[in-house]
Amino acid sequence: MQNRNVVSARTATPSVSFLSEVSLLPSRTLLWDFLALQAGFIVCLLHSGNMSVKMALQQEGFDRKKRGYRDINEIDINMNDPLFTKQWYLINTGQADGTPGLDLNVAEAWELGYTGKGVTIGIMDDGIDYLHPDLASNYNAEASYDFSSNDPYPYPRYTDDWFNSHGTRCAGEVSAAANNNICGVGVAYNSKVAGIRMLDQPFMTDIIEASSISHMPQLIDIYSASWGPTDNGKTGGWRPRQRLTAAAPWPDGVNTGKGGAGSIYVWASGDGGSYDDCNCDGYASSMWTISINSAINDGRTALYDESCSSTLASTFSNGRKRNPEAGVATTDLYGNCTLRHSGTSAAAPEAAGVFALALEANLGLTWRDMQHLTVLTSKRNQLHDEVHQWRRNGVGLEFNHLFGYGVLDAGAMVKMAKDWKTVPERFHCVGGSVQDPEKIPSTGKLVLTLTTDACEGKENFVRYLEHVQAVITVNATRRGDLNINMTSPMGTKSILLSRRPRDDDSKVGFDKWPFMTTHTWGEDARGTWTLELGFVGSAPQKGVLKEWTLMLHGTQSAPYIDQVVRDYQSKLAMSKKEELEEELDEAVERSLKSILSKN
Image (cartoon, rainbow, N blue to C red):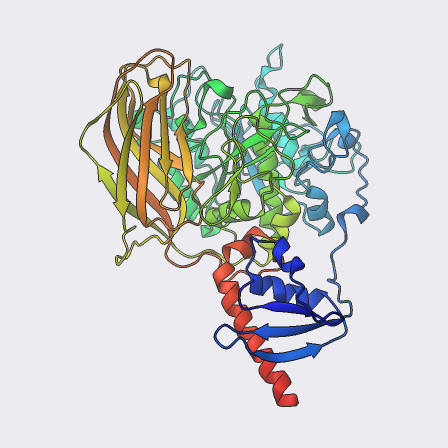
């Protein structure tokens, strides 16, 4: 409570309990908020140095209310769609033994008038049933294509077991129409959906994959992908030649798509469970994508959830409960409905829907703006991971190794998006490299350090981190037993690679693999980074680290300097702590001068 105190008008004794209750926010900000909300107090401003009382003033308190906002408990959402009450991920009232309030908070966004209108989401999958009565009115034929059959009609190929229902289910989560007495309601029920059929052929090719990722960026705002490398616990990323083909659309799409603001790519983190690590998935771990994990309706992890340091946030699915209504309710093939959609396949489209609501609030949002909004507005809520604890990084942002920065909050995101100012230019810095081969001991750990100035003094100086990549070349007698951790100068530890017990590789290893972390978001990259490598299996192994290069990505100027703080208990307020303190000092000084001049 430095430099400030509050004195009660009745007792004339210090009363600082209100200030001490919230330790994450600057004391000046708390006091200013206290002054604005509390009546009947005399305020003494105590300045360091002479500690003199500059002004004592008692004022009456009165009400001011924001217009256009209502308490969420007062919101009355009426939908006649038969599965709407079973869509607990939209509004969780405890259905299927869930935890009330643990949902995407779409009701608040809808109440504010945001339903996805004017936004198109491309579902890259096995096709969509665009004749489905719950999808037909929102289908964007112009933005759709079938790369599996090379024609403009991405209708799913028929199989007796309805195997190709995946894309139709994902499409319904995003864009199913509202109030038509059919199935359920999409997260962004007035958005348009495009079908990009690309998963239904004997083998994937570089051309099909690259063409799908870069299809119609002038029409498609958000791409949703609920697929990736095989989740068998031993497969890795993309093949080497794909770095020049399938990987190529990323920079082009995020820089030139969506009218120049950049396409937004949403990726399911993977369904390999504890046997896999999504940092081995070149798509889910790409800094160009927003990787989404899942929780079930009571906040626990799904049994298939993969964990990794590249996951940015989470939504909902099923994967632990046998209750038939605990799955994701959505559209199904041939005009049908289902309660059985699941996996992180269901999580990614929900996120795409939330992002569509944010885009309606502000069509100028870039792909990086969306990632910043995700970090700032996602909530821990009641998510709990039995393996990984919630931790705070060096600037106070709370994260979890599996859930990322928490569950998406549509209401919070659209409110922040509405007045959002695009973040500053992004820079890339090679923070340093270790090129000499180092042996990894069979017991214990190989510990290396790298001190960097983050390119300070150069044009590409990175002061505020977004993504960090550890580009690593390593071989081991058993790749699956490798464990790799990296700790930032501000003390944040990221698990770059967990044990994958099914991975028996002893030849390939990882060749210049970019392990990525988002856990150091907002931190200062300057200082000493620590890399730890070891084996965690039962049998002794050997290995060699051949290269470690530190890649830093972020901004030179404070990313939120132009953002308006409306909630002093928010992550945005915490991220702007120093700036808010300076602003408050200036505001207090101006107010005092005005009061003194009148007296």
